[in-house]
Length: 190
Image (spheres, rainbow, N blue to C red):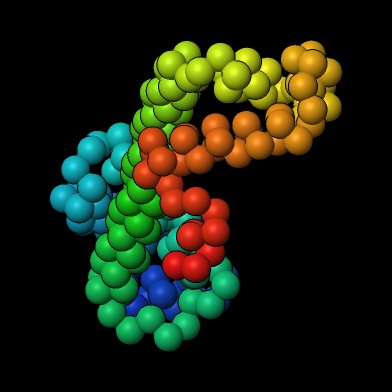
């Protein structure tokens, strides 16, 4: 059937042709309602470039549905409008998720930067506290900070491992007190 004949057909006859497998009738149906579908889409999404993509998605959905199951569609114009509105809603859902992901990523990055700043502040506070300690604690704190074991610290400073352990406990208590962290025994009771 030529194009001129398809244009003059009613929606009902076009649907009958679609149901009998006429693919040209699907194209004619979309062409017939293209202006209406585009108006709905541009009104709902605003951006003309995005509207083109959504129109394409709408056409795909229409063609897919009409190829797979062309029956059960009573009011063609209402059904086509629903498809267009549905594709607009899909777009906004995807856009919302995209925006949400970006927001979460930005919040995570800001929190990570804040943690780094706080970590630096805390490290500087610890270093200041170590610097203000008596030499017997300061030497142990510096070696501990550098990763020396109790045995290595004991050997380097020429003191017993028991003294190293005791002084590490004193240092830990001073740091906990400074930062408002209760001692381990009190922490467990709370």
